[in-house]
View 1 (spheres, rainbow, N blue to C red):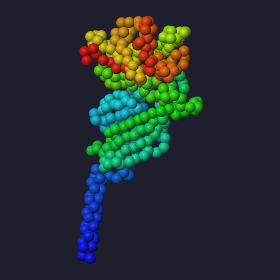
View 2: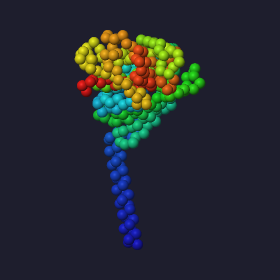
View 3: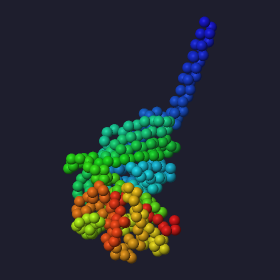
View 4: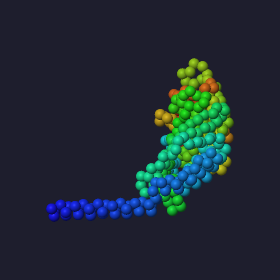
Length: 329
């Protein structure tokens, strides 16, 4: 009997200790970031401002709730952007310094989780509507996950992940192929990076449509008749990405080259002096259409066409990245 009483007293003391520890933990948690309901109440007005500034294409206002430091990480599909300064530069480019016509709207209510004190995971979906260069209206859908952290200045996003895909539009009966989805939804088709550019730059179909259109008529390898390829000059793309301009030292420019990479890993190299229209009449075309139609899946959505070359070893198909390097690096 006495042994049972001792056992009961031991259990009672253990439960009391657990209860006290739980109260202590809750108190610490509340000091660190409060309850989920309290955190959500503070995050909601910040999130609402993000939506308003997104539709105003105000990059500075939209990113005000992001951590303003180099530790910030932003993932979009297969591209990583590190640091607030780089993200701000990229967001301004995506929204064309406020001139974009894309319109966003929430698709359902955001979901919130608190995996640890002072951290909140927010997940939501957006529908994006934009007008392409040919006047076609298309819609895309974004899945977004943000990780908010309670900091001395308030709740801030320290990590964000966006992935995109296209949704059928009013004039479309299906979403189409993967490459067509990327073109129509406004997803990045091309990334330009490397030591030779000031900041990694992503190009959507709309970005490329802002450049002068060029076309060439050539007979591709194994083709029985010539085709008309249309697109933009590779030189114009590199200029827009900042690979060189009037201030670039002549020596640095002359020893620079671009590595053009395909989705399957194939690569080809062009010297920048081969591309700059100041020193050559040669046109290397980054094509997106063949005889007026979007490129087929086995060569698009982007490919290179270099008229005048005896072999097509540098006519890279399914171009996804251009990396600018210096010969001394």
